[in-house]
Amino acid sequence: MKKIEAVIKPFKLEEVKEALTGMGIEGLTVVEVRGFGRQKGHTEIYRGSEYTVDFLPKLKLEIVLRDDQVDAAVEAILKSAKTGKIGDGKIFILALEEAIRIRTGEKGEKAV
Image (cartoon, rainbow, N blue to C red; front, side, top):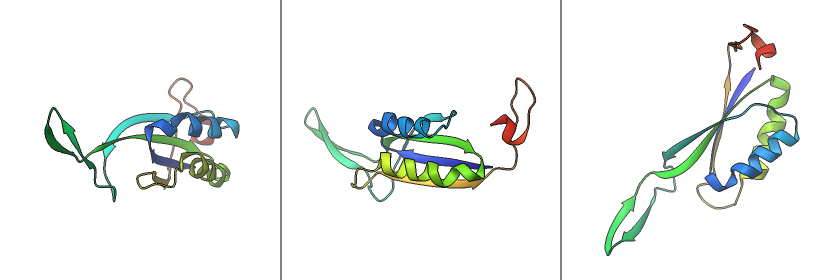
């Protein structure tokens, strides 16, 4: 099993969700996060005062999948989250040791 963590622009959520559900992925966790990378934030003016916004709003998606689903899911995220502009985000793939469904106690891929 693998866990995919993808950090994307908030307005791309619906597109990414549709792409993933369209390929049969049933579970997805979304967390609102703030951060920066090469984008380094930007400067804004509010009531005549200039200030720097260092941490930009993003969404972090967490998806747990069987190994054979990972490549297709990554491709779906890449295609649907891309704008071609700086700050599109990142995808991380982690090995997952175990998953347990709380309601039934099922373990491993059965829990996913």
